[in-house]
Length: 362
Ligand code: GLY
Image (tube, rainbow, N blue to C red; front, side, top):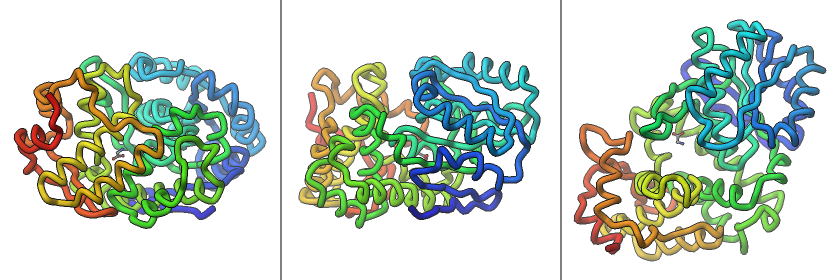
């Protein structure tokens, strides 16, 4: 599988994609010119599957390795968990040249990155993502952080990893629901950036489980998605403009997640609902055609992802919630809307009337 580089003004880094990436981790990290102390951060389930391979690889490459486990789940993505990471870092005498390795999904990656950004004003950080969502989205691009009781990811920093080591074989233990959730972000890249990826997904009969995805298609999914993310982040690291396109489907998606108290949908499912809604808004505004939105929605259905805003939510609920989204700029809600397969625009011209008419809910 090819290597991808995230090109940045400072500290560009490699996304290494290979079935042996985990076993080769120590070897790859030796080339980074970093100190010999490593703290691996994971959750108990992931660590049980992959911890031994990870630690063995690091130790056989000469790294002095300690571990810190955080229980799985969004409810542990908070400053108390970060405090405990700091305690372990202190107990193991980590230095500025030391490295935190995130072995896990998006929650572990975001928290490890934030701890790395802040401990000793910044230690090295390596991502080893284990979920499809983390592989194609969260592990690349340096968004790190934790939740505040009032909202998700309100505390955080842009802090880039030194390396993203992707081992697609780790996906074999991923529950199917999590696989589908990751696929929502893959479909997103097809719509916003990569028409060819979109048509390759269309050519596949089933996408609702890894069991139906050939090795070749999985390679395409991972490499094209990571390349899309790397392209965007390389052009706009801190989301001054272009990077906002990665939030396609997230405006209404976040509202649905928040209004259902993060219990009914996992993030990717809410993004799928948000993409369907954004497609309808784009049709309403004459930006793209009914046929194009149908093609998008067909892919989402084929992946077994939800498409409908739950009937108990009203359009007032949605409108009220999107106004408080952290991506609101100068009081205006920004939408990412498709203009063709592979192209989107960022616009603040979406009025409550357009949303109401497009969504035709309550
Ligand atoms: N997940 C959106 C971004 O990284 O910008």
